[in-house]
Amino acid sequence: MDADPLRSAIEQAPCILIACEGPDLRIIGLNEASRALFPGRDLLGLPLREALADLAGQQWIDLYEQVYRTGEPVAGQQWRAHLTLPDGSVRELFADFGITPWRHPDGRIRGVIGGGTDVTEIVQARLSAERHAAELQRQYRQARDVVDALQQALLPRGLPLLPGVRVAASYLLAGACAAAGGDWFDAVPRPGGAVALVVGDVVGHGVTASGVMGQLRAVLQDRLDDGDPPGAALAAADRLARRVPAARAATVCVAVLDPASGALEYCTAGHPVPLVVSAAGAARFLPASGAAPLGTGGDFPVATARLDPGDLLLLYSDGIIERPGRGAAAAAEELARVASDAVAGRALHAPEASAAERACTQTVELLVRATGHRDDITLLAAQLVAAPEPLHTEVPADLTRLGVLRKTLAAWLEALGVTGEDAFALQHAIGEIVTNAVEHAPGGESVEVRARLTDAGAVEVVVAGRGLWREPERVSERGRGLALSTQLVDELTLERSAGGTVATLRLRVTRPAALLNGAAPVPTPQPAAGLSVVDTAGGTAVLVAGPVDAGGADRLQHELLYRSRGGTVALTVDLAGVTHLASAGVAALHAVAARHRAHGTALTLLAPPGSPARHVLALVALPYA
Image 1 (cartoon, rainbow, N blue to C red):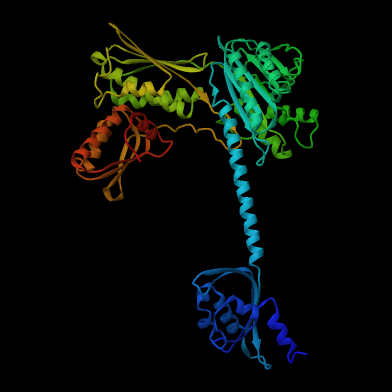
Image 2 (cartoon, rainbow, N blue to C red; image 1 turned 90 degrees about the horizontal axis):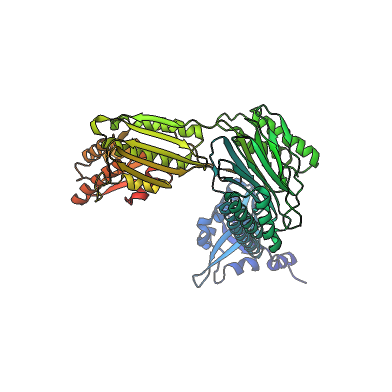
């Protein structure tokens, strides 16, 4: 038998064991497993800090000293250590450990005993699994992002703004872990002022469903844009569904609404029936037209109805009906009640939102928060409203009065519902044209501005002046107005005659849908304040805010040249606060930049993404940061 079986057992134990004695923690014992961690080292009799100097900055020796000093044991799990090997390489170790005081019989601290278990393989296996899981999750997110981007690219970028009808939509994914599905919506302006409304649902989720959705939407959009009635448009989509297996059993509701008369034609091809809500909040479901889902056979009969002024038509996918814990009848009744409250303004407080927008967003929020939802949800609303009054104003032949025109235009565009990039483009293009007309107005005569919203969903603006103005043959400091305007709108024409010049511009305007999977509508720009130029960074930079139009361009140029000593001192110009940058302002920046180039000094223009200045500078190819 062993003379000391306990010592033999400790020596051969698979755990790590190191015993230290005295205030300098001299190592008086360590077993075989501990010696294997430090090959080539003779550790016995050495103070712990000297023996294991490579661990000094890793808290291990600090813990031994803490236990000796306080008499309180410490423990930890999966702590990492880096050990230096004889060849200079480093070994990584993970250990579960406990460090406890070693006492004399009378209770005084004699030393410290540390024990631990090497769990490196366990930790490495866990870390490898976590990395693998993270990579799989990254690949999944990447794949889903592609599908979501595909779906959003296939959905309409915006809903048309039309006289006599306000359209809104919302789209909610099935859940945070679900791929985009086959729901879609569309609103297509029709010849004569009517609008075609579509909500459809392709079976399934993922790339296939999104791709099929895009094909069906393209077919229906093309037919409805050409003026086909609902039945004929659905028949064309049905022929596609018969050829494409993944499109079979897709359900669609197509409705054509005439805002002038309130006449409605619709077809429910296997799809939930439309809901009509009056301005006062009374709701009724329209009867089904009797058609079957696409690709399943049968005709597409069309039903008719009539809406009164203020009535709202709501189309939706079955995801809002087939919610957990709700039967079809109860869910439909709840939808009608909640939508009625939203339309009448009895639900959430949102005075800035139209009734159509409230019907689409608040209805989804209020219904889904109570039950959750399993499928994608799409809502499309169209409300009959009074047609907007055209704008007719006179602008005096005074460039300092352009700010009044901008405020007038902003109020009129806001009443139409024009927001974001459309409002930006119209304000800038109209400002350039009016500036040109004012500069060429003979004898101080005013310039006439007329604007209206067309049946096709375009803002049409006519600027009439007595002067015969034209762009210079060569681009100069004041020769960029018409070129800039042409890039901002869909169409710009000039008619010159002995009586003067008439400019007509058109821009099709849209309002963003509420894509409730994260995309947010573009906020309505705030009215511009006056031009200000403020020193920052001790005079080496300036912050420009407010509108820079023809009336303020000369001031901007003067202020920048004054602060840069005529271009001899480097200057940074922050344009983040600029709300309107006309071609005259661009010309001023070009002039200042030329002075700096002549003196070999830097002029840095700062224009953050999404700012009006960034948009304009990108169009005119003026360098910015």
